[in-house]
Amino acid sequence: MSKKEKKKKPICSSVGGQAVMEGVMMMGKTAYCTAVRDPDGEIQIEKKRINRTASGRRASKIPFVRGVVNMFGSLLRGTRALTRSAQVYGSDDEEPGRVEKWFAEKLKLNLMHVITVIGVVLGFALAVFFFMWLPRFLIRTLDTYIWKTLKGSVWEYVMLGVFKLVIFLAYLGLIMILKDIRRLYRYHGAEHKTINCYEKGLELTPENVMGCSRIHDRCGTSFLFIVLLINVAVIGVVSWALKVNGIANGFLQALANIGIEFVLLPVIAGISYEVLKLLAHFHGPISKIFKSPGYLLQKVFTTREPDKEMVEVAIAAFNAAMEMDEQPELKETSFVTGGLLSEMLAETKKTFAAEGIDESDAEWIYALVLGVNRSDLGAQRVIKPGETRKINEIIEKRLTGRPLWYIIGDVEFYDCTIKVDERALIPRPETEILAQQVVSAVEEGDKVLDMCTGSGCIAVSVAKHVRGKKVQITAADVSDAAIMLAKENANYNSVDINFVQSDLFTRVHGRFNLIVCNPPYIKSGEIQSLQSEVRDFEPRIALDGGEDGLEFYRRLAKEVTRYITRGGLLMLEVGEGQAEEVLKLFDKREYAMVVKDFAGVDRFLKIAF
Image (cartoon, rainbow, N blue to C red):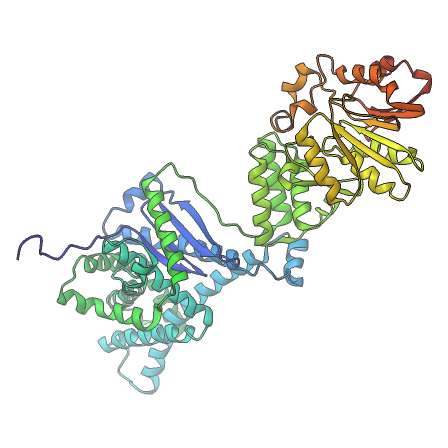
């Protein structure tokens, strides 16, 4: 047979893994990645680096020692992955129960975290009971009532092994009653199939993976079986050498036996790991005899055939682990899970502060997504994963510098919903005062002109509030884009407005009883000093008021008398410190009124003609 005809040697992958709730964790040389299909059907992937110290890296290469290091490391990472997967797959539709709310409000704790800790402690206690204390108890019972000469003989350790094996198999069989465990075993099968597919040199497609075996040499089930056998052998030799069975008091003898098992656990783990690694390198008939018990346990108990969607999750986890190994510069990622409102909001505020973003934006994000008032954010509650996902999406966009309200897409303005985007300025809360002043001044049959309308917020809100007074409203702006946005807002709020694209009064005709204008009033030289979200995203044409910020007011002062009726009213918004200067331009001090904004700043002018 030629070399070409020889069977291709299988690839030995450095990636191993385990099944988790609705997903798979794959661990490579430098990172471990967990993929979970969330309640929305999306595959979420969490990527974490394995951060070993220099001594830890050296220890992981020393035979027998590396088994202990890898076992405890894998146990910790596996527990974390299992816990995190449960948090992702936790019900996203159900409201938090009374107990969960009580933990959040009174103890400032996430109930899921508490349950996880309790679960780990109970799991440890049950492991000690079933695999350390119960086998010894059965041995004592057997020696006392049936086999009088069992204690101290080699048969004691044979029977100890038999009892541990029976308990182990009974445990594996009993937990299969649980639906979630059976599903977990299907993901375990998907994990094995994926690794087998890669080691065969096949492309990782769902079709190829589905055709591979769900049995694998390096499975944790095989490892546990090897640990069980070596445990009995090592414990037996040490117990015989130390004459533990000579202790008269049964309780002290049990404590001594359990203590020995704990002390020898690292030794047993180290030996078992080397045996498993050794067997994985051989594929002949003799090695298969030693591997067959592990294969049988996998086939009968711990793996089941997965479906295509499960395989897709396993492939995603495997590919992520390989990418993290191949690209050290790749950053870690985390699942989108729920959490406590206070903790998540505080973390978001911290992140925003580091980027120079006002913390009020963080409060608005949480209030909008949760459907509560900002003042209610102090009440503790649990945020669900679906809510967290929406919050994170907005946070990520906000961190690019884009203004929050452009991200949200609309803003509430004087009882109206106003759509906002980069075509016009975002309506400021203080401008609502100007709209309210207009509504208060409008009379039956008036004609109103909203100059520099932008998003149309003033014209739309006034039209909505004076509906029924037969008021004609015209809105003008130099920007075609702004006019289009203003029209959309008029349609959205079901109001009738006449829109004109015009550079101030150039295309406006007729006279008006009331003219309202919020023109650009920022000095040209101060534009660069504005907050980045204003400077870089909001239209400059709506900000720049010329060298001294008064350019548009000068033009208004020259032209407005031709467009306003006798007895008409002009209402203006001005910049901080500009009120006196603007009044001088109109020479109407005796017919003018200054109105302050929420901060007590002279912000609005009402000038009678």
